[in-house]
Length: 155
Image (tube, rainbow, N blue to C red; front, side):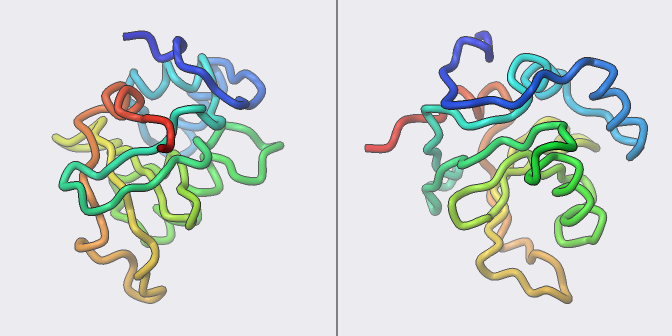
């Protein structure tokens, strides 16, 4: 399946491999290959098909925006990683890659055995001082490509 075959309402300016490598180097992380390929092809943006359910079907929502690697965009990958992961709102293995209409986050696991898995982090019940409780973190898919494939149009 080719990630570039999907329709987008808009994407951000192109990012080069060197831009992705600089982001990884700055934070000492390594992005999964499927997600790196997505950034090279689209660098974030808004898909036409964007609705999804968590694996347990408890939550149905949409990806309003995939974050780009870009200093020009206010909602960018680095800002969300800094503000949510590095400030311990999210588990340290999570990289926020997008947001839904209510500003909850779609996250990619970037370390450990679960690397590449996609989760939905429901920020509606966020306790500022304690971070996000595990009950508000929902498994969505085993990898980024499967996540993109399950996105659908609103009914």
